[in-house]
Image (tube, rainbow, N blue to C red; front, side):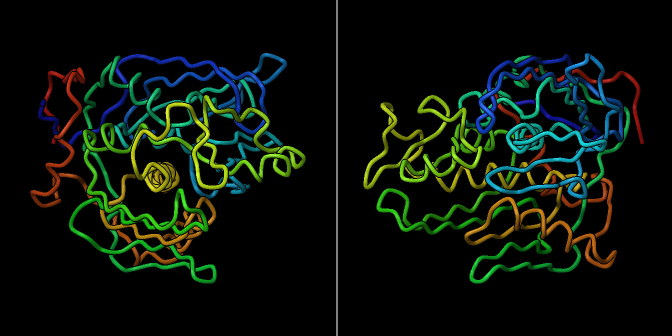
Length: 318
């Protein structure tokens, strides 16, 4: 286990992926590259004519649709769907700055989890950058609701998520997970959780233009009281873990890591986006702080997955 400083981090090298969009069913190529300090997550799309759009920040203000996934509007009628698994892996593994380039309209679903992205980050390693990491410290609780469903951001001395789901399904039922974040815990306990759906909904979704690339290779499929995937579940409570995976990806659209607690009941992409809108509706709700201003609990950032290469800059930074 290697100690990392409170400095920002980017990838040590670019990583490439090819696959299909879970909703479009179309082939897509994706590259995640290193980015300079204070970039956050940038995204651009290579169009059919070979040109590439100007990179823009991956930000909640660009969310244009939250039906079954998070879709970003890049401007000029260009959008990218299903961004949440990519940003979940980046945020979950502790990457601060990265450039995402996509050739297609949707990020590749791969195996339906964030594990392929996290494994690639683990493989190439990270570069510590010459700037202090900044975080969004929650100063005042913000809650958004939709009937009995809610999402909340609250002051908390750490980075914690508390999610609960409740489905009318014997396979899923009511599941809850409380997760105190570290990169190692994310890699071990969250990144492998796959997206899921119900066999009864497949026809309706495809008629509406969704789930055209969905299969047992990339989605948990529930039919009545059983899971159709031959290998079963990766975790007993894989369903709530995937919702937590999604939330980490969606919350990264706040632009900085969140120092506080996120709570959710029956939540999803829409409530995740709305709670960020509520957070930024008043400057009294948050404060941007440097990592070295935080208490000892910040050491959670130092708990890295085994085998992660970390390259340090030679010069010191204050």
